[in-house]
Image 1 (cartoon, rainbow, N blue to C red):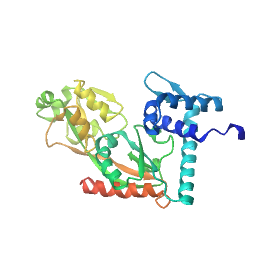
Image 2: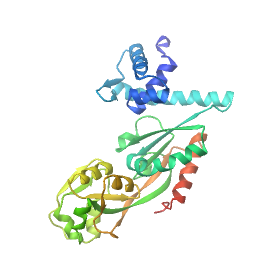
Image 3: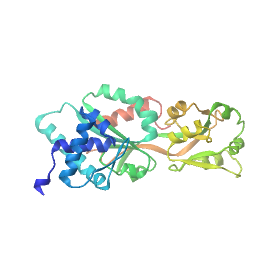
Image 4: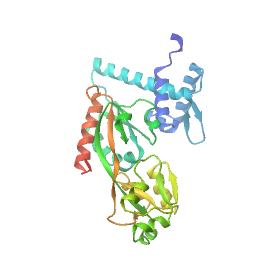
Length: 298
């Protein structure tokens, strides 16, 4: 078994390729060529005797063996980084692993990351996004930004913000809707992963039960794209969906009409006391930034 311990450089390359699901993006992060990344991954696979990726035209996808191997590799690299810092002093760059639900990362977090990076130039944030619960149980992360019950994802958490729901559509369609019952004349795009959705909004607006044509999307970003293409009316989840709504050219169907969602975004981790220094700094910054933006408790 000792003879099968892989090269540390192979493991670094594998971790970057697995996290980004792209040899090209891993190459940019590691300052290598995509061909060199591919060669190092192939060398690792040859050493282990199993494939770690399915190669596809525009991306690479982890095999079951690769998915199982990623968490211990990430943990081992972090342990080595921590030991090096503790013995030899602060390293030039500290990696921080953050997972975030897609709509929060797309609509909000990207707006603030430049500020965090300017305040902490020695911390390299490695951000990955997900949609389903399974996305947040794969791989290692210091911090997770999730939507829903935080206890499913970690022992401790901080509430970040809540959401407001309201219908949105292209301007011409939105202008044709003068009352809530008019919404039922069009397909309603539902995001299946959310507990709060069209049924809650229509009930709170006291729209009588009737024929409701529902079509489904796997994320709010996708629902906005579908609405832009005329597939139906989407449901905004402000403030996280504001950017996706604007990019899709959508506007509120009933200006001033919204209802509060039943769930919230949370920052989740296993133990506040055990957070690594870069994670503590990110947590402090994120809570302060959300409060300064006026979203905390909203």
